[in-house]
Length: 139
Ligand code: 5GP
Ligand code: ZN
Image (cartoon, rainbow, N blue to C red; front, side, top):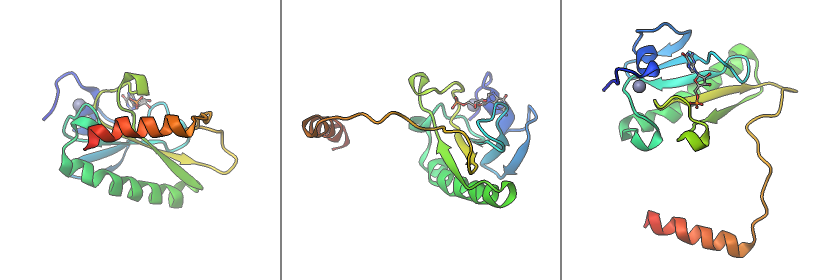
């Protein structure tokens, strides 16, 4: 399940070199070339899935546990105080490489603010309406 033109398929399967911090049968975890912070890593499945909605259940069941393992290793090795998991789906969400990947971003005491937003202030009515419309699709 690879896509010929996909750069992350090539990296995940070892056709293009990358600084690899973890590898097993299903995943390769590499350091990001344009890191948000020191040690920023990307979890790549070796099979091609465009995004979270395309991911198969077996792979998605393993991703979070792997992210925890990487985060724990970062805290020990890099001395970061925490880490963010970021996973973009779709161009509007900032996805630039259309092969599923999860960012693991180490966060350091006193480091720059990131992965944040200005909180909105919806009314209770607005929230209730929104909840209803999303719930309908989940039923
Ligand atoms: P996205 O915006 O799609 O969630 O994230 C794509 C990420 O992949 C970016 O943080 C970018 O720096 C990283 N990236 C893009 N091309 C390469 C590459 O060829 N090698 C590595 N190691 N990272 C890449
Ligand atoms: Zn791919």
